[in-house]
Amino acid sequence: MKYFIISLCLISFASCSKIEPRTDCTVLIGEWEWTRTYGSIAGQDWTPQNTGDTRKIQLNETDISFFENGNFIQSFPYSFIATDSITNDGVVRTFIKYSNKTRWIIHEECSLQFRDLCPDCYDDYYEKIQ
Image (spheres, rainbow, N blue to C red):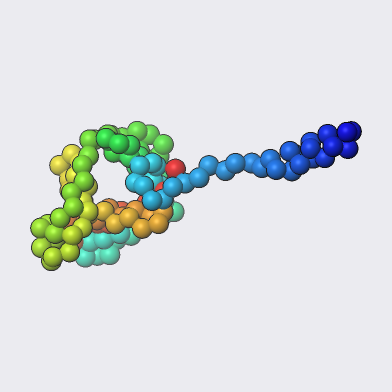
């Protein structure tokens, strides 16, 4: 009996492991950390490394919130639009509309891209953190 209890305790301890928080990259809800802004005809390229800034967006079910250098900037209600009429090329794309902006969203794996709707504008790149 003594060996049974010791074995049971060892099995219990061995089966315990630290549970890491899981980032679900299939959903847009969560926190996204800025990694790069690129664009314009001049090919401007900003990153946290060359600007010294940190930026984050947080999406919940109703609002998109913007943070810079750890400080809350602003929050807006948002909606999604799936259409081909904005690009007029017959390909249905997803757009996010907040404040007075409409931006094309490209979501792949744990990366998110917000693209402005003009040929000489900017793309913001983010990585999922939660």
